[in-house]
Length: 424
Image (cartoon, rainbow, N blue to C red; front, top):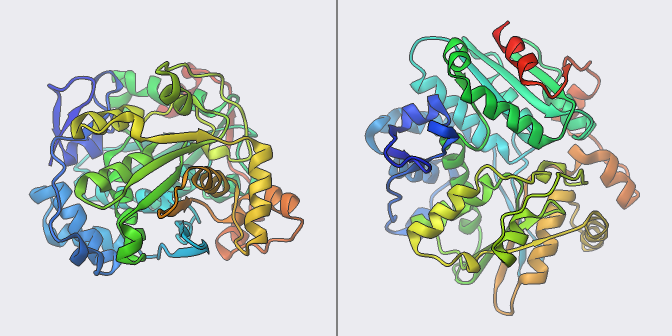
């Protein structure tokens, strides 16, 4: 598999190098040179999740990793289902929270850990990533206990839910967590500065595990096929998918699935009030505002890292960017929507509610709607219980961490402090 740096097309790397390196020159994102068109989509959709995913990832990655090894990686990573549940007539939820950390990022995090363990070679590796909520837990649990791989996770102090924090800040061992006095964009900027520091990067074998790493993105392609596989062929003909969007990796993966030949009529990028992309699509002006904390905190991103990949896909496929629908939802509307969904018999959380609301606004007669549920409602226990006036039992994955002490360090938004910390 050959990939190129979107900022510097002349920088070309293999899949293994892209996984190890994370980012290219000038923090450019790596992107596949070729996305093949898959034959016999209907036959592919008839296969079980793991077997189908093995074929999809083999087609994307090619012969660089043996088929036997790649099949093993997928089997080890995808050990949980992604069921589709009907919410109402013609509207479905794809539940991506049945993995060990109850969030969609378990798919990408676990596959990346398998990929890095396969292609790592010799030498020390330090994973440095920023999280607005769910990435941290997925990455921490995927890499926990792996030899010679240290993980450092930055997150905005006081801006993720207490249970999200408990899930990845109580592990210890090779997992270090740092609460930064700032927002998610500040955390992300610190990660970028670290990657720009060549001396630091080489000293600690720096790598990133957020959605800028191509291995995570490719893994996420697979659950779009899994969603379509659970719908009837008639429902697949006019399928519209609403993606709760923060850093835009999830949407990028869906667009890759469409490029591979999965029949998706259109995508909707659903955001909270951090609405850089909806405003950009409406006006043509890229004008990020300061990040605002919301109920759907994993989407509190004003400068989405993956947006260049979205534009690259539209350009390469000669799709019109105006065909990407997008809208934003306020916290008041999110609360209202959670109540509405609960009254219909579907218990959701803020991110899924944002995606559902925008989908319902956008869906046309004769279309089938699907929205992504990216986290278990219990990960947002406090807000969901308050809004719906009910008590949520904690799933075992959360309950066992809820009583453990936090092991995080607290740090100013200061790169020199972070640099010293990483070199310890």
